[in-house]
Image (tube, rainbow, N blue to C red; front, side):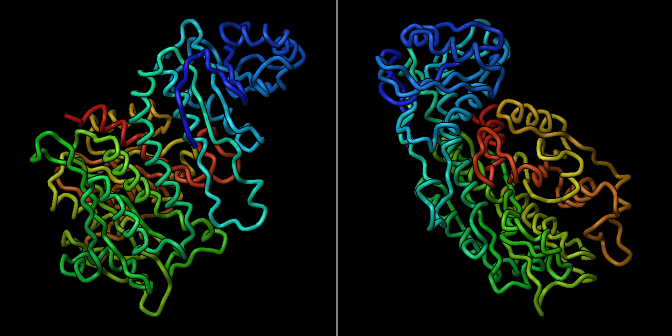
Length: 498
């Protein structure tokens, strides 16, 4: 889909989108459109419950005399609260309404209300970002009734008086959107189409952007004594992989990198601790953390970020088999610590244990952040609105929280503490891989912390936000959300680029 920035005088055919603040009258370009339409917008508002709240929209077929085919009024909310995120959601909602309507072109003529937190080129760029994120589709496996699912809109224009500046602002945003799309594609793929080796092959395509990609197979991981990761995948016919993606964009090559580590369970049956049939559905998405890491590395490389970053993803399938890992097995991790595996469905932490240790021992990173669809308990605590954040460093935790606030990928920090260690104390090994029936997300994070040395570290439990069933959000039109790419990119842009 083509996105362009045009002069306000170049509206063109198709749908025209205007913004109206809560409690305000039509103003600016919306007022001009109302005048040209003979008061059609005013009449439509007068016979509706439209008040300008966020998410509200009124659609009007354009009267004769206008080049546009239809007019859409979108609520901006209270003027003083209209910011980048609200602008993106407005654009996303409008695109969602019109995407399959038969229209070919949408032009946004949205003005910043007096007192708004955003305007000018920034407003135009964020409108484009919202439209871009909402334009995502995943229809590659449809063969019947495909036409009704295919978008008709193929061009989006953002009318602005600052065309050149808006274009410049949007270039890095579009790179981030492409990274989100990669993450969504990976999570949406069915598991028969995305084995660990398939994921690794897709990661290798990042070399065209200047990313160095290397892949460790099972033989290489055995030499490194990655018994925790390998134990998870030993019941699958598909070989486990560890993919390392390096983007070296810092001005000084020797600058310590930021390490991003992702859980990549390409399908999770639960192993011999088999999930229920219902619980197994959707477990193609248990590699959402790895997908977010791959998408972030793509975004950093595409926008030529001035940072050294390494993305490490542990890719496995957790399957029941005669060779599968058993409850009561003891495995030895790369760190040398031993783990009593009491539940083979608590497998993600085993994958991360070795991936985290590898990241620190091989790259000596400035900080390490892992992402994982790790626990169902985080859903009980936070639902689908926040990811769980755990960290051994207050500054890093605050930076991640602020980045999430800016990008609309919200996190909520939960505690760590030695008092939780007793829950994972093993009678025969250094630790066990599950705790008791309470504080499941915390004890899982406590487990991971044992594989972190003195490095600044944060763990993001994204089990509630990596995909969405039921009603979709304004900027996420598919099952997979691509959560994680925007927050990580913002964190790096704000604090680690030199």
